[in-house]
Length: 140
Image (cartoon, rainbow, N blue to C red; front, side, top):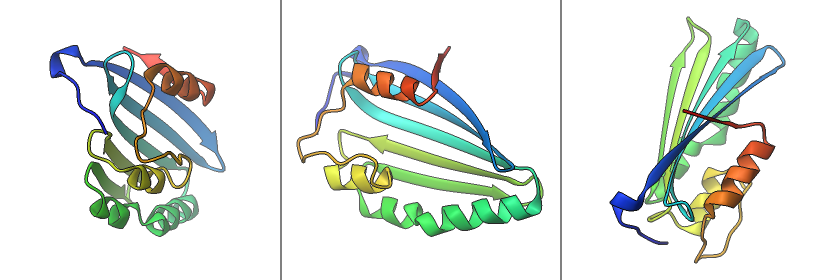
């Protein structure tokens, strides 16, 4: 875990929209970095269902992920879920502070997609390249 002088920090915003199986997901991500390391990754995912059955499926999926409970276990992880059954939307907010979050917490909050050693370092350029490879575009 690491720290940096706040005046050296920059913000890069990215976005991707995916449509599949009657749902549209728009993910907005904010990376706070110094050009070398990422210190914070804040993500908002808005899921919009085309019908009630798809909404129920999404609702069950996010509830089963248990990320709200997991975030409570780790310093540096925040999780919030906002459901609107009437509008058929679910908004998931995940904020990660890498100056506090343990490697185990990072693995859990990424649902096993990232598995790093205890003294991990989130490289800004590699992260940006990885996200762009997933379809994210930098937005102003």
